[in-house]
Image (cartoon, rainbow, N blue to C red; front, side, top):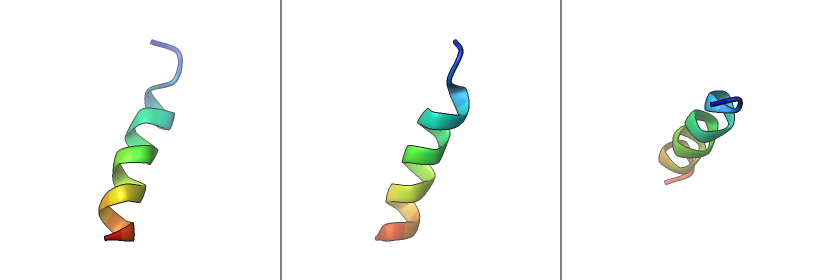
Length: 18
């Protein structure tokens, strides 16, 4: 687990993009 921010950012980005 050395990139929890990247995964969270990707999910948030997708939610914000929609």
